[in-house]
Length: 59
Image 1 (tube, helix red, strand yellow):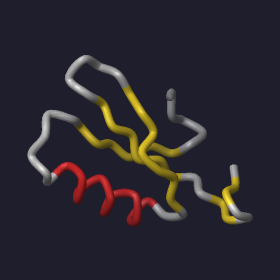
Image 2 (cartoon, one colour; image 1 turned 45 degrees about the vertical axis):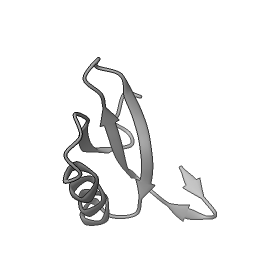
Image 3 (tube, one colour; image 1 turned 180 degrees about the horizontal axis):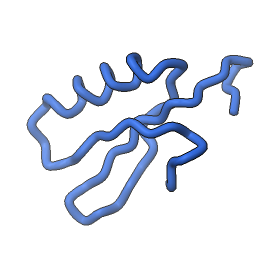
């Protein structure tokens, strides 16, 4: 999938305490997606942020 012509295969997914999942963003590299997930996860909320490859993600 592309956004603005770039291939963005890595997703950051937010899962809340009720099990609901939402796509937060798409990223070009796994490292970039993990940095975003780590930053969001460090805020101390009850949500879980995970990184998934777009072709394997269920959203």
